[in-house]
Length: 79
Image (spheres, rainbow, N blue to C red):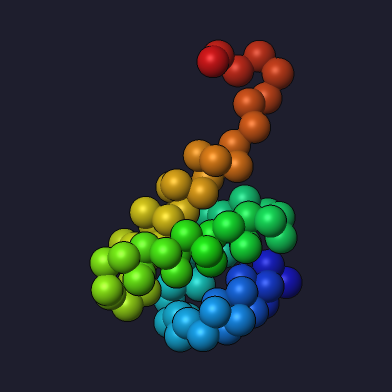
């Protein structure tokens, strides 16, 4: 279900993302609709800024950026 949501986010932006990129992202991304939107937005931004197609390395960079923004410290986590 999360993969379909992410795929729709890319399609809404007119992005053609290879299946291997989706297979890389889905098990690693935060499990929320907001994260799927943020991830698609960041991948789109990076792809346009670098003028390159969406690859696994680019997706990894976007995932690292989005994951750090979406991380909410658990009780007892050190700041």
